[in-house]
Length: 328
Ligand code: AFP
Picture 1 (cartoon, protein in one colour):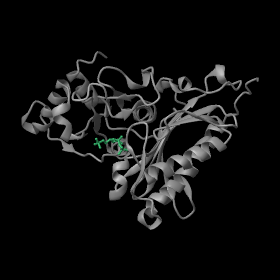
Picture 2: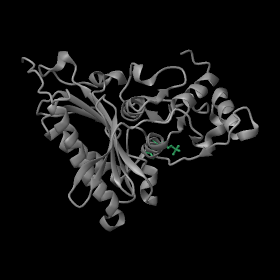
Picture 3: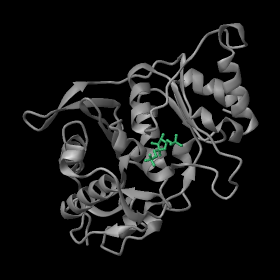
Picture 4: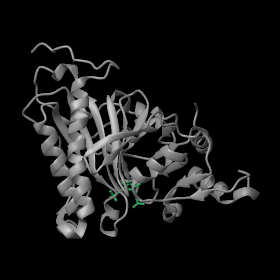
């Protein structure tokens, strides 16, 4: 089948990509409503099932996943999806030029306590060799983060906010719940290069490798220590919430490897958490790394692969990487 030339908008973005993003937003509007309904709609609490991550699935995890999967695979723009809540790749029947990997509801541990959650999505091109219609496999999703044609999140907070990049900077859109539209509210998001705010789950301090122990210890020494300034700490237990704060006012976020579980040292997933967040952060002037390599350059090896993550304000991430003897 000859690949038709994509129709482009005046800024060079494919119209099909715009339509695909609108499909994601239609699903996220519904998720935002269900999250807001909570107990009124009986959607809190857990199911009796576990996902491939070995995590008990919350009712809203399953509902959000089903909404996104159904709408994306029916859209005609998406060949296949990958999800935190799906063991394997799910192929659609209607063609399309894109693959979508997503975490349908990030921050599941916050659902039942009415705290922040969000949807994270990563949009990849269908490999050229599969455009004629050959079956899509897991291998087709294993593309480096730099291949993403778009990435973003929708945060379900006091307001529902979309952060989006198509490779031309980062913009915020706020859901106008009266009319059901996401309206552009901030353009050209830029992360401040320096910060005095860090985000890490400090309860894991005894599990961190030495470089991260030293980096955090020097931060906690405050003004009298080697850093010469005091820091503030935030931890939302929802990557979407912590990254949104960093996009708004700077900061550094890290989920380092844990030394107590050699077979499963990392928590955050590469394809549908680190890569989309990494593209947003880099497009907003920040940095992302595992501590030893740039995450967006990594060649993924499996669908639900996990990686250590350090991201945020460029200068602060560089200081953290110096503790890891990172060679720029
Ligand atoms: P859940 O979606 O299972 O709550 O995990 C959220 C997350 O992947 C990420 O969004 C948070 O930054 C991180 O895990 C929180 O991990 P801890 O619960 O170990 O602090």
